[in-house]
Length: 126
Image 1: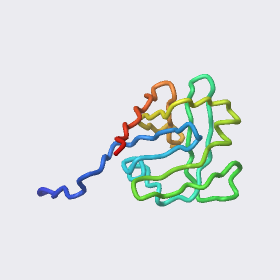
Image 2 (image 1 turned 90 degrees about the horizontal axis):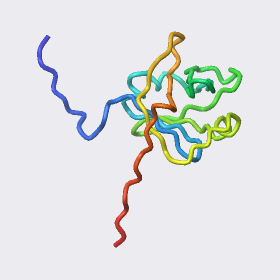
Image 3 (image 1 turned 30 degrees about the horizontal axis):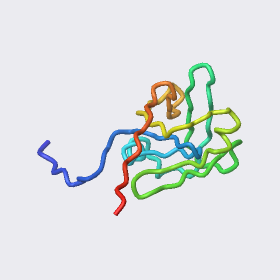
């Protein structure tokens, strides 16, 4: 196989997710591509309180119990998960980010224990 030209500059392709204080879970373009998120419309979320892991099941069934809308964005995707965070008492004080994994059932895993606090970008006031 010959060389393939890289033209997708200005983007990161690591499969990561961030969870915000507001309960929003957002995915990088790398995660969207790796997990073929554009092929799905909904997710079902699971939480393991012992391991502090969130499992994300991709689905196209809006009838699945607990289905949440998966929204595609220009640079990735996101899930409005405020109710999920409140139900499981996930007190997200700062935005946390981590690389994603997949479990034996094919669910995307977000490990809150390994998540790092994202540093806020300093804004300059003119």
